[in-house]
Image (cartoon, rainbow, N blue to C red; front, side, top):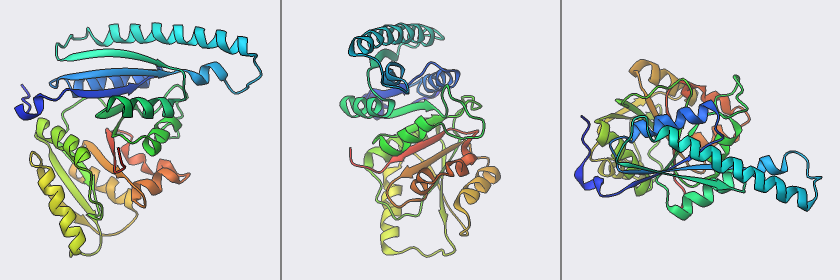
Length: 292
């Protein structure tokens, strides 16, 4: 049986799961419950229904909007209750508690406001929703949450079945002084699952600057429960370099940091977001190096 460090057991994990009740969202919820099954955790299931009320056209009267809002909230509350009843009994876990939230707001605003207000540790969501497009790695909602919500996001592809993350890839250029809170979350995961954490430096040069050495040292000190592996690969298309490393090392979990002027930001802000299609089969956690 998996045993967590007792010094972390005192903190209840707070996990936010946005849902549109699609198959992909249900799969992400089941994955999250499995992933944190040995942690004392509170799961918040959030459904944002403003888009259902307004739709593409805003021609309704105030009375019609009010009626649609009331109806959408009632349906949302009903669906959330059904979802919680479903996930809380298969199998029941005394370490977990569940709560549903219906939000009359856009998804990104509702998620961001709730994550900040409740001080959420991690958001877990599917890579796509009801508008599943086979050509895209991530649906538009997932990308928007990656980009604009200041909280770690764990995206679960529909093809990813839960398994212990034994090999985690963390590409880094050692240029960022990562946030302690984000690294604490990563350390709790690697410590719980006794994971190897592969820090991959994509560069033609072995030598690091003083700044990079300092950040590498900070990274090492902040991940005491991780089995760290430091590797370098030559500069090339970064997405291809990461994809090759995942294949060669049989990586089963990817972690990247979203910050200004980083590779991940470049991918998220380009129209060719699907270049990161390397993550379609393994869970992908985006850590936010943003102020919270």
